[in-house]
Length: 369
Ligand SMILES: NC(=O)c1ccc[n+]([C@@H]2O[C@H](COP(=O)([O-])OP(=O)(O)OC[C@H]3O[C@@H](n4cnc5c(N)ncnc54)[C@H](OP(=O)(O)O)[C@@H]3O)[C@@H](O)[C@H]2O)c1
Image (tube, rainbow, N blue to C red; front, side):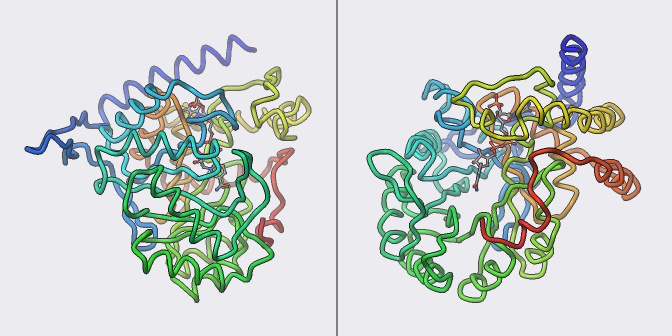
């Protein structure tokens, strides 16, 4: 079984490399007279709009560039090189948060992307209390939001943040007051656009009425589809972009694991029922669909999973998190994949037959998380 999966992955990678060779332009960074690298137009990837913000159709999630989620902290210089390679490949959208690290992800993103200031878009998130480098509870008091944004600006080495999200809903503070704080932050020139994460459609509506929201960031993938209950429709109606986090379902959809996989206690997956031995046993058969469709399309499982998300709505911009240059390259290949309407209908009827263990209920979409 393990060997079979391994050999399938080798085949997928082979076809990804071949597909990539034909599909993706090889860009370079050009030097301007001031020695500041500028983006080469030939590197451009297809773009998408998040409200008024235009970004590459796939972004780069930078959470695991520091320990605390899936892997130990990788060498900083490797991550800086990885970020710069991503820019070279045409990625113009980078996702981080104050709480990743805390602070470390913003710091590496700031250092890595400093040479491209103004040419790429950085999104970060605030709204957790951090004490002694520990993440505490939520804190969306306007005073706190207006204060902590200065730390993010400093770590990101920018004068303005392209997209500033409220990381998590704080039930202590009315959404109107939160919107008011973001309005002041934007008026002060410290951010250009704002967004929310993991909120219910009603909260998004109220927030948008106070101050137009550019993006909602919420978990969404082939396997975790609760946003299809009113969240995506609300975004569409309001003209709000949608940024799915966990677009590979924390790598499950890439075929990286099997029913025997076990996770280190420092890996967040070790705490999730989805990745428990019982969860993996129930969930693995779902991958047969992903595997079969990937083979049919001549792409990898990661590419299939990301391309499926892109095909759901034109305002969706997935941000797969990866610290691997090879995975980044593979993931960008998804931008070239197309599905016919009948393929999408067929895929949907197949995925809806499955009951996955450890995914959220449809009803959870209507509750602020
Ligand atoms: N708003 C929120 O509350 C929230 C919550 C969580 C995350 N996020 C953001 O969303 C981003 C993405 O979410 P996520 O990292 O949780 O989920 P994800 O992107 O679905 O999964 C990340 C995992 O997938 C692996 N991976 C990525 N591409 C791969 C490929 N082609 N083949 C095999 N494995 C692959 C990564 O390992 P390698 O590094 O080895 O490639 C990593 O272990 C984060 O970086 C963060 O910026 C936001």
